[in-house]
Length: 296
Image (tube, rainbow, N blue to C red; front, top):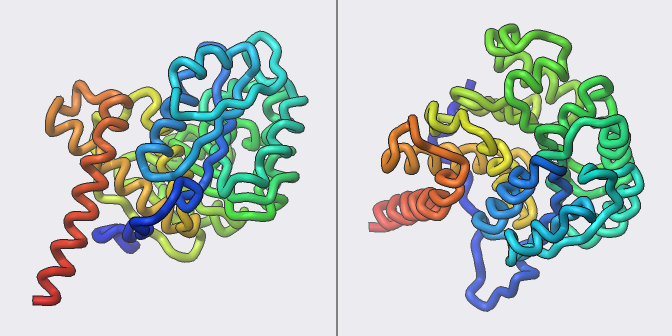
């Protein structure tokens, strides 16, 4: 197995660029009681450099996001008691073509309407998707729907979610992380980032094991941050595999930076999010230093 020792470089940025040059991320996330998942995803996408984030939100929750996410554009969709109705599909289909990537799943909840909504988004949209959390739960009983999507899909399960996808126990997944991730990615034509200690990232052919991260990252909403990071990198032009590899690396490095300040006991998702700029600076600085040494 190949280990990620040097993650891919971030996309270059022109000095005369405008926000449209750095991509637009569409986020479909959140429900009553889980608005934080959507917020962390959106903020992480912006922190990693995309030009614009639009959040499709259950209409009854929009006032929360209008205040909490001033940099994010919101679009209301039909809901019932703070959870998307299936009719939200029309809003998603209308917005998707104006964006480079869709982050789908954080905090969506798990209802029959959500499961149908997620599956039909996969069937009827044509932009890359980063699928996480309740998005993964929605396809657990019919993962073949991933084959219906006409653009790259990155799936970011933790061991429990992976277990549901492959009808195994979390223990079995943990005992065979690489094999299960590779087999699933190959069978369903997607990129898998199987989270946990030494996260495995694979497209079924290439396999990477991440070397950053620590136990402090086993905390609520950490995965929502990762979803936003990977989506942001895809929006900026990276391939799905490279975005997943670099996203996992930067996410883990941000967790390491946070743990150095706070100890692994005290890291929260907010700390990981706040440490992303330092992780990016470290990554860019390391590559610049190596280039300068090579030229001397």
